Amino acid sequence: MTKRTLVLTVMFLTACGGKKVGPADDRVPVTVARAEQRDMPVQLRAIGTVQPLQTVLVRALAPGQLTRVWFREGDEVRKGQLLFTIDPRPFQAALAQARANLARDEAQLRNSEAERARYAELVKKDYVTREDFDRISSGAEAAGAVVAADRAAIENAQLQLAYCEIRAPLDGRTGSLQVHAGNIIRASDTTPLVVINQVHPINVQFAVPERDLGRLRAGGKGIPVTAAPSGGGAIENGHLSFVDNAVDSSTGTITLKATFLNDSRALWPGQYVNVAVTLSGRPNAVVVPAQALQNSQRGQYVYVVRSDNGVEMRPVSVTQQIDQVAIIRSGVVAGETVVTDGQLKLTPKSKVEIKQAL
Image 1 (cartoon, helix red, strand yellow):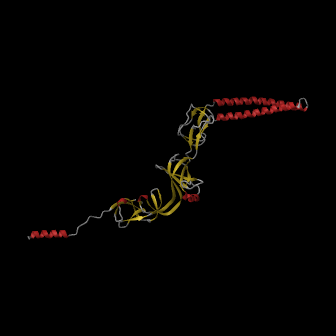
Image 2: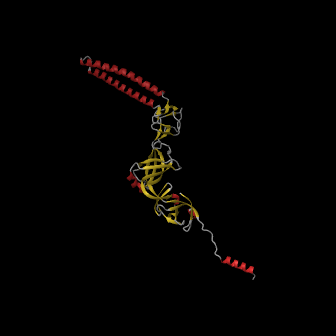
Image 3: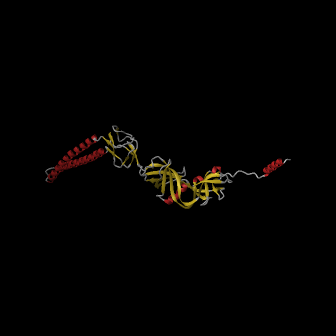
């Protein structure tokens, strides 16, 4: 064996007998957040339906031709605002006739009373019989009754004339106009002229399980309630204003109503909203972002990051989820770090690389 061959052989054996270098450990990039301790509210959550505080179907009380509409569809109107005008001329004529009848019958009454006064003196002197005096007295009383009927007829004619102006019975927003100017309307019509909904303030109706009834009754009326449109939008603040007097046995729930000022008009009749009833406060609660929670057949869990950048799969008990925050009853303590994004790539033996901390 030559010297060169010997050197190559030694180099080959050395290379084969050396330690093999393995690849570097793979780390899973994750986003994390720290479990915090804070005061949290105790809330009941439900889906509610917005309802107007009052709804009025505006109808005519006098027949006639609708001559003018004083608002536009969808306008907000004030109580007492003029909405419709009915042709007043037939009612003005009826009022004038009633006043003329009163004037005529008052003249007859004055004459009858004067005649009764004369007969009262004559009957004392026996110039006329008692029967004649009674007849004159009855005529005067009848004339007085006719005058009273005329005055009632005038009041009725004035009322019918007043019905020619249809005014808003409450503050609210008008809906679609059902009858337009020029149409003949009657008091017996079943179709309303317009529907007015009171939207300021406004109600939200919802239901909660009967198991929560005791806590609701303990809080009484005035419990704070918030409502937010399910499609997103401003959160309105209100208070509990109604608790139904019976539990619905078919659903095991009880109906509630909350009242909101609705100054921003964010709540609209018929709209679905997310309702939160705040019953009390939970001091020093441990909370984590809701996206840290994972589900398994055994329940919910989170991945907790250890000091060596390893992870631990930790079962947790969740008291309540409020918006994007979960209140933890057990499983995690304040100060621990939990994974909020990247959990699908993790196993209990994984190492993590923190790319972002919330």
